[in-house]
Amino acid sequence: MTAFITSGLALRKPFAARRCVRARRRVSPRASSTILPPPTKEVDPAARIPPHVRDFLSRAPGNALQNLLRADDAWEKFRNSHANPTDPPRVVHTYDAQLGATRPTYDVVVCGGTLGIFVATALQRMGRRVAVVEQGPLKGRDQDWNISRDEIFHALRPLGLSDEEIEETIVNEFNPMRVAFTHGDGFSTHVNDVLNIGVSPSLLIDKVRDRFLAEGGSLYDFCRFKAVDVFEDAARVTIVPRRPQTKDATGGAAGAGGSGQFEQGAAASMDEDISFSTKLVIDCMGNFSPIAGQSRRGSWTKP
Image (cartoon, rainbow, N blue to C red; front, side, top):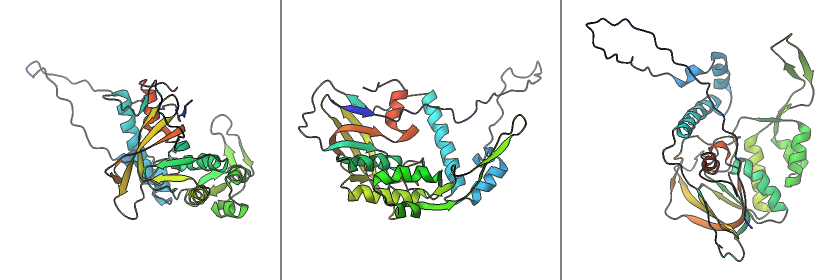
């Protein structure tokens, strides 16, 4: 029996709805009855960000401001494509037939490496045969993740990382944290040991990736997910190898700590697709996942 897991994150509108108000014009009886709309002006995307936020992000490591603008642009395109679908991509196909794989290539295939590498490593250490598919290099960004010290050790020890290795990923620590409410009487308080450490995604993902490979896992980086065919006895995953444009390409996951750009085209597709069979497919590609996108458009129901 084939199982399938998708992120299926709820779609949220990234922008508040805007109401356009057109000024009335006096039209002379002798004038033409046709009124041309005023010419549209190009708006600097950065102008939509409050100045103090723009200033802070411009000084943050990892090109935080540019990444935010790319994310904003990607959400705009994503929203428009969802509101006005033309030809929804179909990447999941189901068949009432047997694939005929006596022993699938993998027990689990995880699509999306930035978050997927963690669940993949846990499953690999449990004795499963696991593969991870990532469209770019599997690496994290420079901007920190915030978490509590107890949580990071609780999460990473089962993956085989030593306490010393976990400590190396913690790049800053601070106490206490101030919690304030701007409404009402403006109540505020301070808490200790809550989201008070910064973890480097770049260091952390490097260590977990190395542990995954040391445990015998398979990594298909620079490989774009193309499709999955779900049969009664197994699933067949097809990926497209991608050739980096440069040796130092920094494409990759576009969110959740990934280092990559939001635009497509960080690597060129190569000649032949790669297909392999599996018992379980886990979608960790997030809101931009083509699997989740197909499900949202109603052209496929998760089995």
